[in-house]
Length: 311
Image 1 (cartoon, helix red, strand yellow):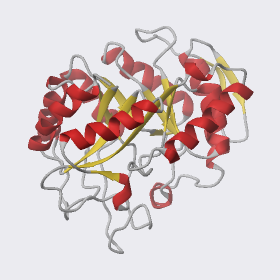
Image 2 (image 1 turned 45 degrees about the horizontal axis):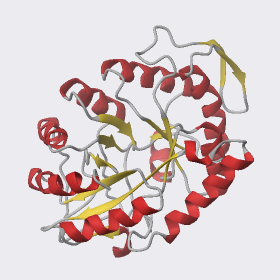
Image 3 (image 1 turned 90 degrees about the vertical axis):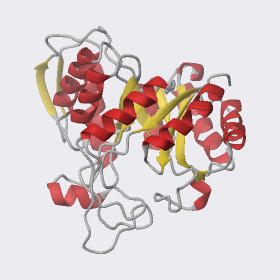
Image 4 (image 1 turned 180 degrees about the vertical axis):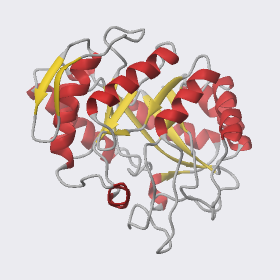
């Protein structure tokens, strides 16, 4: 099993965190993560956070946020050598889909072909309102965006006229290091989105708020994704299964982001036991959202990463 680490790139929660992590801190943590064997460094794609229970619980009137996803990933690409880089996941609502394809291919070039392109439809309404992006019909907009992004990355010149997006003879020039572009990961949990996973994605990423104590929820989603693949005439075994969760290490008195059932805690042996249960249902890549977010916590991941690679 491969292991990913989510870069907590701002003041998006936890233990009263108000000030964003500076680039110098993030660079140090990323380099250590690469050194201990982490396979993927991922960055969330959000513009700001405001109170929107049950997923985001903040005092009314408080605003938190993170650094811009692709800027951060490009900087990480320049200082790392081995790890793959993943927006988890890039919200197609925030950027014109043709421009997003251009950004992704450029980042794939800078990283030497180390990009995994995670895509999603978005969910946090306050950031849409603040930045004046339309929040309605997000799945329909996402579906149109995929009809532009995917063929462009595959090397096609795309002409498309939809209800939400249009491009005319649009192509990526110059091209990055991979003619077919980076692999596409899609985050989803509802049947319609899982249909798009089957049609367009190389990998499927489950919700990071699933119950990690019981793999049944993940199994159910994988079964829906597999059935969607069969309906699309695709071999389900060609879809990479990925998941993740919050990991509460020693010193994490408060772990934001959901109820206790979505937070993995315990000794290294207990954590590996949970990862083994996920490997048994086909999960090949698991991303941790680490708490507390410190250099010492990243160091503690070493034995977990080493053991996970043997699963």
